[in-house]
Image (cartoon, rainbow, N blue to C red; front, side, top):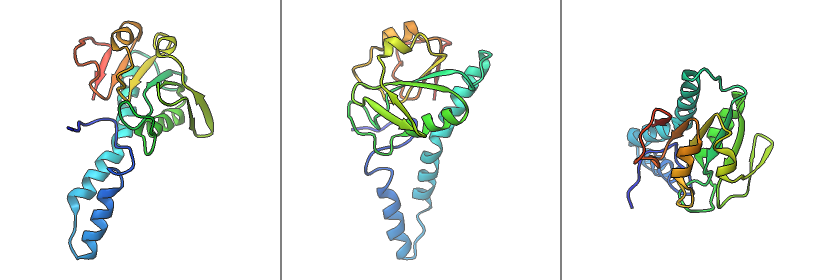
Length: 173
């Protein structure tokens, strides 16, 4: 299965196992700079996504503070109910710190806690049109991307879920 760049790494092995390998290599007196650099870059992706959201909103005259940002997908990968190390949690945390009002949709995950705030999943149709920005973090197959495209004012697509769509309202990584 191919892997493509996205909003960060999640799950139970990819964010953790390379650092174990790097640690073991260091014990042998060898430096694994490539593993460390990849880990740093992957760890910075949620910040990069939030900068994309902020810039996209600013270009439309809207600050992040007070903006309604709807997160589409919070599981760490497509079509699973696993949130371990999900980059969505980091993106949501960073957006909340900047003052965004958050909602999310995920067909597999009904509740999420972000900085003490408990959120319940809402139907994408209910939130996409009302949001100042929709951020696609996890590209679940259950999402109706054509309807999302029609309803949303602004979309930051971190998974290339809208690859067949062309519009100035889509910001891609």
